[in-house]
Length: 511
Ligand code: AHR
Image (cartoon, rainbow, N blue to C red; front, side, top):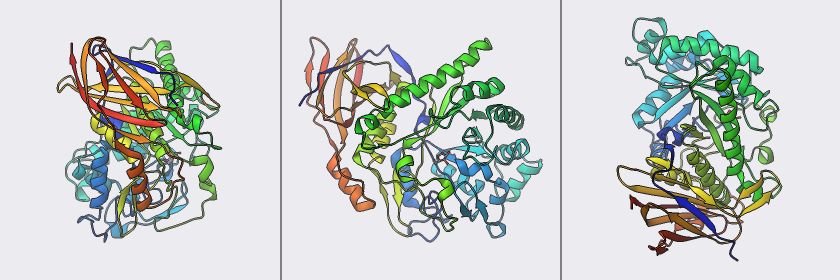
């Protein structure tokens, strides 16, 4: 059965903004097996001389990750960074209350930053504004970025690292609006603390960019008011406000789940509106942008028992190792469509997380590393989305959902690299019928050279490398690009499979 057609119009002059490479960030938290037996596993057959797994690093590159947030997440809100530096044999384990796990402190700031540097990945650090404050935050900036001759910079040098790391991006705590956060605060308490900590951090290194905590999700009771209060304290100081959002299929409501990108789109618009309202009140020309530093599919309500119900564990326990399906991968692709369409206001984003914990990459201790189905849309988008995001007009049929109201059945994003002429077009068909899309390219000659699509199935997700490979083989494939091109009207006709996400690569030249 075919749905009524959709029309996507692009014009090379209509652009949203340049796609910042930091949009393809990810996240490594001291949680479960993200660090230990994830990125780091001395004794693994592929481990390098520093104990980091080569197979995971290679997949991280294939995924196209530009930036990594560290060390949390909820973890950071009770972390003493000083316990994770210096000779490893002198470091003491501590009980991380966020995930009720004994943290051995074998990997800390230096190990992580040096690994990221060797791999050519930009780090994004977070400071603890839960149990700690201004002094520890400023000291960490000095430890990472300071020149010789002061206490914390000299400690870094004594620990074997002469050159400052030059960490540019810094999160002022994590999800401080959440009652689950260790050291949770109300908006006034947090806003004041973030302003003082940020001020001190920028006095240590004025070149850093600061991210202030926004809401942990749009469902928080304090959403909106939180952003406005926190920004009323920090507007002139910070560069970005954070957003976090996780999506899942609940009660078999596939239609709502497929519409998650619309939920994300509304969330972004509302945070932008809140930030701009604070700016307008201050008569400020400064524009706060968004660091969407946690986003993904996560079966949080349906599969996770909650942090407080976890037993105290040690030795890198398996926590929230969600297994993903092709349907999840279609949704991840569609969330990327949303992010690209907000390229002007969202320069930074992190797929949460990188490995083992709600992740596109999985590992077995001592064994192999593999790609979950969600790996493919992320890797493809990170590779193809170059240059500017184009401001498309999408006219599509819509359908009703219980969670997001009316959502479009087809979504689209496109990028164009003016230097190389490369065009990338990303399309999601959320409906359960084939949709024919008429791509109208006024003012441009467009050619579509190849495409790949992820088609959702109805199979339950099963853990393990073998199943992930089977799903990929069945659901991730090349698409026929012999489209009907009508030169007279400058249109190209594309047929989208039901519940699919497709990426096309081609070229665009001005007509
Ligand atoms: O990514 C997992 C957790 O989700 C993070 O620690 C926290 O910030 C969020 O609630």
